[in-house]
Image (cartoon, rainbow, N blue to C red; front, top):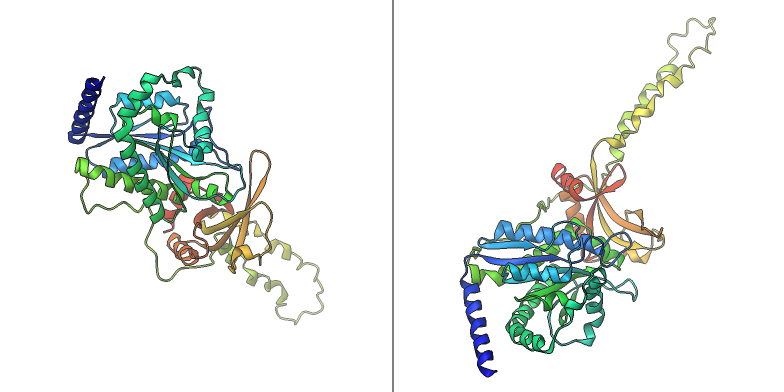
Length: 418
């Protein structure tokens, strides 16, 4: 038995040497849940979509900035992949690292905030049992659940094989948390737990929880372009530090792209909402014309009823030019399940507050509050920077004709009105 263990350790050392000297470093990015498994639910969004958004952004960063790294995705669309198959994808590719991306949730109130990252532990840590149960519950959607039962022999073998991987995974998990903190995310810490998807992988692996979809402000952040970019960049920075000594494919002084965040200008154009600039077309100066009774020399003629064609001078349907194609930028500061008074202490003394509402699938209404308004993206960034001390999680939202837009159209707005 001892000889077999020595042989196994030698094989592990050899495989590690090969991994460190291989031409291509392989990382598998796993967007948790998908398809018929929505994951955790917020008031208007689903975990599976948030996970995929961040994974696709992270993969793009690695592919564009890391030479000698191959990126493999467990899914790139809204597709259900069983836990066992996710691990098989990584094992069959002989991956060097496995990163599983998830979104947190809690049933105890809606104030939980922050990001946390887990590495594998073969012990069942009761402190993290709630999270483990939720993420492992994916097997309810699978047909063959018995394959997750592990024999005593396999358990011993797994502990030997996973020893080095768990230590490496724990270090990488801490690196991810350090990057989250740099980007201003509340720190929920580094933990170890027995996630099924990590237990099945034969390489260092981590599972990161981006934030709490059950907290309104967190849900808004997780679904925003800013939130997706910042979270992906945090994981990328940790990955870059992890992989650079191995591949030497990243230049030492390379920098992470700013993800389309334009520079701040010194003289912001504030309070220029998009719907308002069309008032000049009202042309009230034309109304005085009928009242200027030209030469009064003909008083005998009393045809005064005729001048009533004044209504014809009021063809103002053209004065509804909200569809001018111009975008409006605001800074979202908070949400509430009830309408707040304009002088509410939750606004922390800020004025120029506007609100819009969202409704979830159950008909629950959420009031969303924004501050400031500008037609320039750089100008609204200046406003956002000024109020960051009061609202650390504030972010920029885009409107067109009074309706909020997001995704590609929001990106188009930033480029069109920099």
